[in-house]
Image (cartoon, rainbow, N blue to C red; front, side, top):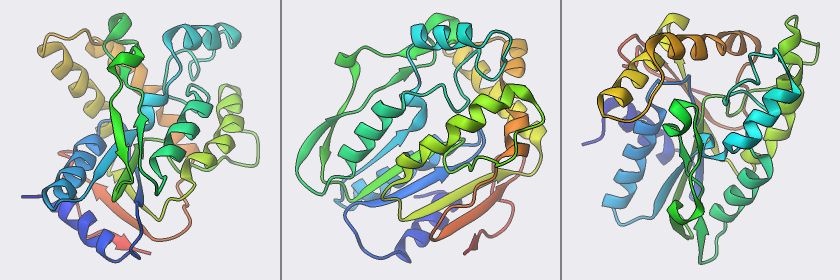
Length: 257
């Protein structure tokens, strides 16, 4: 049985024109449950005999080596020291994979996987033999990410560390090609975002996987709080906006625009 949030999104999907695939963009802060929601949507479609797949933009992060080179090229910039911000993804790889997943013709698309437990929780791209191959055409493609749909600001940000990520953000528009609709999840307070990430790293540690300590997780996620204040989501087309409380539950009915 889909959760109340998943049910709300499924009802939203039913309002959209029929297409193959339906392409849904899912934006929300780190740790809010985007991947869980996307998995529910995929499972629901699968239970009805339809082919669906969810891809996270996290899987398009630079390799660990490329990320270290990026950090070295921007010494002292906390936004580019580790993965996460605009500019820390392999844009060409993401564009190539997403274009192939949207294809209306039969095919098999290798989709990269990013191992967040590698290098003590700093992460690295998994070897290609571990990438799943997805059969197309799909009935539903869910593309999810914390910064998916963010728009760059025209004036230079007051924080100089944000200049490079802001400039890089415009190039991510290619990842939204073919998107029919948008689901935007938001938190009632920024401190929830911090707590969600700390909880996620604790869960990873408790499972026996390498992960960040509480202090490292807090340091990591707090680097993103200025991004939520700077960039907003203003997608074209239908959008469902849902606010989540501290427990990641929908606070009120989402507004369809």
